[in-house]
Image (cartoon, rainbow, N blue to C red; front, side, top):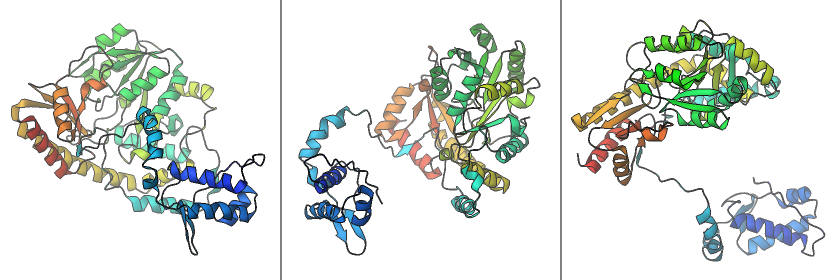
Length: 468
């Protein structure tokens, strides 16, 4: 039921019933009160507005007589369908405003190969719902109190155990900070590191992290990459004290940083006390060939790596729970400058995730999704074979996206032809933060959010659109 917040002015010459009538009428016309929305009863609205019930009755009767609302016996008053009444004057008056609005309805594509797409069809909704209901039934009053700014300790202990067993990350629960997404954690980290840091990022990278760090007044230096990841000689030339990397599966190029380059990067950080490495381990759970590769942090014996991860890919984006592991020295700094910030993740959500992990549901879900995504990954590779030697594929065997490099076409041509055929692909150049564009014939194509049959059909339509 919609709560009406009506500011009645008793000093106006306009009767109170008419003020109520006009307010509700405009709410309906502007779409703020949608079709079939139930209005408060005349008695409850009269009590809320501190007017007589007959005043509200008069307003409702007028709205009913004009067709804005309808009265249903024993049920109450409901908004009528009035869209057609205002196709004329109202829409003409608002046409210019709508055209100037920066919000445009995004074009819907038949097959969207979004790199951030995930498959929610296997999400254990019943388990999650049961846990949520149980927490409410248990009447745990402390969950409605302010918790630890770093996140509830039981969940941090569970995450520490999971990271060690799955990624060989060496940390204690006391080093883990839980936040609502990596964006928030990067902002906290910025406070810890201090303003104006020189931060090196791969010249083609996760643009959102770049935007966040840049908005925090840090100086960002693009660093060239080779087939093993960030070029260390170029990194040295920047004079940066912080290096942001994705060693397990670089986005968007899909490069897996080998052990030799990892050791070189750790040695770089060790050469100066104030140097640190930010390791973004955003989708390391999904690897389809060989054994899982340990995190860079697992090799760090001198506390030089700031490790970041998220449950957005492994569970669901809307969960908005990420975590950051701080080295000891930075942890002390965090407690000095960030203790005033409350945790941005609800304690109820933290408890649900804790129960989900402790009960073994997370591990089972992860195993199921690895198998499912591997099937999509293999299906995608098979479908792309139809292009023959006209393409080269990068970044396979891990993550939820592939890179397709055309030997005789530019990415913008491929993307344009795809859009004309209702196929959405993405350009690598959108991830550039440097000047030189080396991958103008390469597109990013995600498969996580598509069914296998959609992948096959989408690639066939793309091939026909390109006449290949």
